[in-house]
Length: 271
Image 1 (cartoon, rainbow, N blue to C red):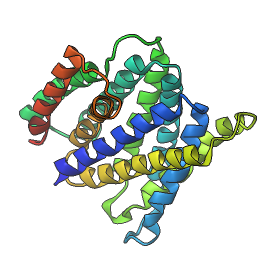
Image 2: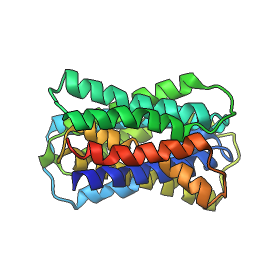
Image 3: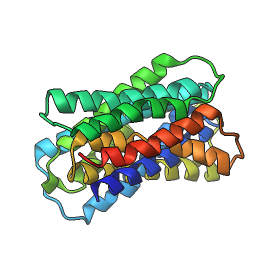
């Protein structure tokens, strides 16, 4: 079940990134990030009726996770708005995956099985191959900063106790909203997005919040390092959506990457 939840998280993140990347080319990236966090707060409000008894520490961990989300989304969408998907997405995804794995092993005492380590070794190049689309301008710093934010998001949320329920996710959506608010305010002179665009931004953020809820549930059932790696397979989703919805052509290396990602999943399930 933990594997399925983590893969569901990857689907949610993939849909959110696909939609957010398209929207960030039409409206200011800070607007996409802010409205996305607003949608995430609305979805995470289910914590108000879901069971849970969070401590102050749980809320603080959730809040730190939201800061990571806010920073990660700002720099991810900034890179995507510059047309740098081929650099930003793989850098942010791989960095956001590798850092939690290293922290989990070095500081949290996690010990993935040999098969899981093999899955990690397969998943890293798979993510790179899937995400590389060729062309695009270089925006590696955006991807690197986004990766630190994404790693913080995963690690901090995983530290909240199971008894806290979904409250840490809600706390994270609130701090994520506050993190992107100052930059959003600077775009007040930009034309206001149309209602349909506003709704799309909120929906993308709600998908990301749902993905984070699924990740939290997955991390309670298996090693954090493995849950992170499985959730980090999300770049495959925009590629598949690009092929099916936008009729984009799949490159040979992306095809190899998708096959490698499919091979990595059962290996990672042996945590």
